[in-house]
Structure formats: C-alpha cells, structure tokens
Image: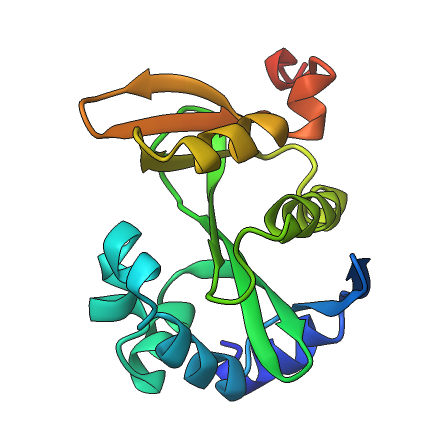
Length: 191
C-alpha cells in the first residue's frame, strides 16, 4: 500500500499549470501534502464554506489530521489553486467502487475560498482540471450534488457540461459525461 507521503510525491509532480486571469498569478497543483491539509483547515472556516458545505469545517477539514484521514480513506484526485502562498480553491474527484449515479464512477467537488470568489476563477480552474482529469480518466462520467438555490454554482456546472438529472426540494444532482461517453462509446459491449 502506498503511504500518504508517497502518494503526495507521486501525484504532486504529475500536473502543474500556471493560470493567469486578469493579472492574477495562480498555479494549479495536483496532489496532496501536509501544507494543503493545514490550509484547508483554515480556509474551511470561511463563513460561506460553513454555510454551503458545513461538513468541510466540521468533519473533512476540521483538523490537519482529519484532512489527511479523509484523503487516505477513499480514492481522491485532488487539485489545488494557489495564489502566491495562499489557497484560493480546491477541486477533488472521489472514486467509489459502487457508483451512486449509474456510469458515473467519480464525484466532483469544488471550493473557492475567500478572496478568490467572484473573480471568474472557478470556471477557468475547473476547465483546466477537467482537461487533465479526462486525460487520465477519459471514460469516466462525473457527478455532483449542489444546493438547488445556488444559482451561481448551477450556472457554472452547466457551463462545464454538467446536466441536471434529479432535483429535490433543496438539492440538485448533475452529471457530466466523460469523453468516451460523449463520443458514444459507453454503450459498447465486449465481444
């Protein structure tokens, strides 16, 4: 079994991309490391994060230890958006052995933190990450769940190719077909 430090070393060096938006110098990094765990603890104390995703503050990223345990527990692919030494956002994909949504092996989650919201960064960050994700997981459909009243998130997800598949009183589930599905290959059967 690969330890957390070995996973971090392997995945952190795999993908790194500079992103410049409106003279903001940002860097997208793939992988996990202890500094990211510590930054997530601080960023998850943001009022908007607590309001929209209280599990981040109360469970997932309640402490650096909790964040490291969360990362080690499931198969996560993590990308962070750094602005200088500050965490501006994070995207992660989680793979489940039994998909919650048929044909969607991964969930998608994005968080933009205080100081990075409202600047148009989320869409560019997500598009760059989805390109890298699809380069390695091309056949995988991805699903997410969001608040039904979060118009900004719904608009962002639709612009990224996610489509609503169900909606309850407070939550909407959306799916984004992987490259192979979009090309029609998900229906092919082995001979």
